[in-house]
Length: 317
Image 1 (cartoon, rainbow, N blue to C red):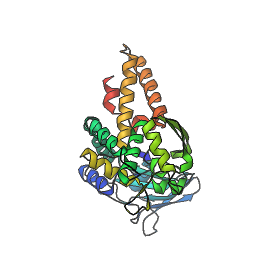
Image 2: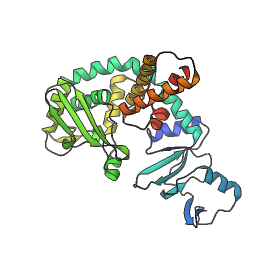
Image 3: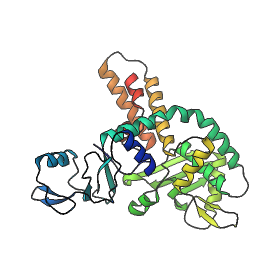
Image 4: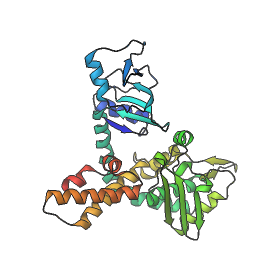
C-alpha cells in the first residue's frame, strides 16, 4: 500500500479511477474500522464498536502497515475500497493509504498525460504571455503569473487546508512575506510540505514586475487580483486548474508541471551519464539521477521516483 500526505485530484477523478480499477469509491467520512492501543499492539473495532477477532480480517488490517504513531485512524471496512485508511501522523498531518490497484490506474493516467502536456506547453506559454501583458491586475494576469511560476520554479500549487493545518505553503497560499523582488529576480522562501524549508529563485523581469504588483495589493495573500469593481480576490488552486484547462483545451492540472519536469530532468540526467555496460553501474546512475531530480523538486528521492518520474525512463535505461 502507498502512503501519501494528501489526496490527488478531484473526487470525480478518484471515483472514475476506482471504477476503472474494479474498486468502490469510499470516503473516510463514512463509518469505518478504528483501532485502539492494546499492550504493545492494537485491537480493531468494527463501525458498531465490536472488537474484530476474525483472523482473516486482522491479517488484512495488519497488512496495511499503518504506522503505530498515527492517531485518528480510519480504516475502510471494504477491502475493495479505493481508499484503505487515513490517519494523522506525529505532526498532525493527514495521511492516506490507497489500494494499490487504484494507485496503478492513477499513475497510468497521470503518466499518459506527459506527452500531450508537453505538446501543449507552447500554447500554454503563448496564452500566459498574452495575459501577462494585460494592464492593471485582472484575474487572468495573476493566474498567468502563477502558471508561469509553476513551470519555472516547480513549487507546488498549494492547498488552503494544508496551510491551515500545517502552516506549509504553495504558490496559491503564499503570503507577501514569502517573496522578495530584487531587479529581475524573485526569491521565494517558505515552509513546504513535511515542514521542509525552501529557497527558490526565479529570474524573469516580467514575472518579477507582476509579483511586485501583487505585493502592492493590500492584504497578506501574495496572489490576489482586482475584480471589475476593484475588490480584492484571492487566487486558489481550483482557479489555477480551471485556467490551465481553459488555455490548454485539455484536462491538465498544476501537478502536471512537476510530473513533466521530474520525467524530463531524469531523462536529461541519464542522457548526460551516457550508456553503461553493467547493471550495478546502471543502478548507481539511476540513483544519482533521481537524487538530482529530488533536489530540483524539493522531494525525497523515494517520493520523487514513485510519483514524478515516468517508470519508462528508468526501465529503458
